Image (cartoon, helix red, strand yellow):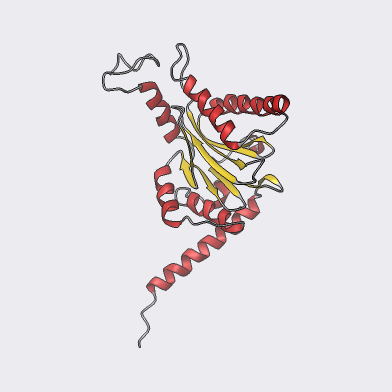
Length: 249
């Protein structure tokens, strides 16, 4: 194997590109990120590490805006994310300037995935070590969308999905609990999914919601704490109901 993992452009005999697989491993070690699509809202949530005491926590952001109607969350290497986000923002503005219309969510997803794929077959470069969740509203139909891209350059549309650390556990939770929701219920589902893997509760969660009317809005810590308390109260009530002795008939 050692001969085949040194160059990005060389396949191993069994058809693997090891550098791409190593990039996927970098994603799996990154902070968890989750995206949920509702009927009138899309929600992004990420696990954030506690900031160092003297660090300005406002600079540590994993949810960013690409355009007025599109946002992105990522898991993996922050430096790679910064480069990819800047390229995507330039493409959004270039499209507005050239076509005089905003990009669709699928268009910018294809652009990001194409850029990631390009870095898997060129000499002298390495793959981007991050996976992205891209959400937004179609500027023509107003329909919400959620897409995921990964370091190999593949992309796909989802109703709800997760990436990063313990993403399989979050995805299993979403598969069991997802249903078409709107407004606050969609936000609660995204936070509940993150709480499956985030141990310290709301203080280590960053959440942003996007609506067609108001665009992207980061939730304040107090808002997240209120939803976390509500979820924990529902869990406690469900546990109490299970332990309660059955009523005699």
